[in-house]
Image (cartoon, rainbow, N blue to C red; front, side, top):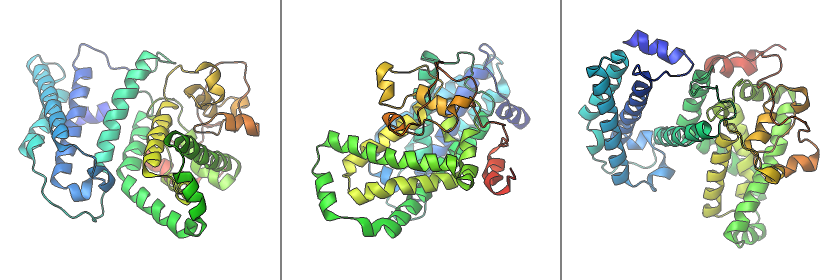
Length: 374
């Protein structure tokens, strides 16, 4: 069983219906998420994000977990009975049983300390479940490259980046918060903060996105034009396929640097919690959507808002697209500074780093900026 599971995780390509592989993968995925969920119920002080705990409706989470266990268990039993990829169905069923033995959806949550070190297992589960369900559906509905499977080549590398970058979100947020307050606390001005906090909600959202994107633009441009920074950013550009998972390929040092620089002016300007929450939703959606395998251009709006078409060009190996389209939210920033792609073609031909010199594999890419000899 373990050998076949290992072969499955190392493979890529389209899942063929009729052999129990597709349904087995769904059951296994739900089983893994439920197992991780029950661990989070048992150890919330170490495995869940403090900022998210306050927003949870535990009853709803329990119902979702119960439904997932029933679906995963039901699919597994059907596949076992009809001899459809029993090794895969068996693995999923074992996870369902293990989750149930650990208490399943009925694990009580008692009082616990709120200031313990933690990893964001809950954020990882929610983000993976939400992103995959929403964006895989969108990609199938509006696919740009219709022959690209969900499990395309190198998906394992991007998934490893997704796991690490989301599981340590607590560390990143804590480190970023400390750096921002240490190095930019002097810049806070009550007059500026008062004006910003007095803005209507919609104006505050438009402004925070603009402020963040101006910082993002120049930071992103520096990653391309400063050789030592390109060593980090080349990891992100090494993805040869674009989909909802490709945006997760990012070196952890780049993630920390970029988040610190973007959050600094947000802190200095004193945006309200509601506006910051709206910005987090926007940046989270665009970060995934603009890497997705979707054929979306938005007509004339593409000159104002960053779309998948705009950002796909940024990841292209085509000569006319190199070091262009830096904006993350407002496309007009690139047009303003003369760095927007100008091409007669609608979409680029190839993605990745020109020369394909970045190795595949999470650990190799983690070491790449420090070992690469151009």
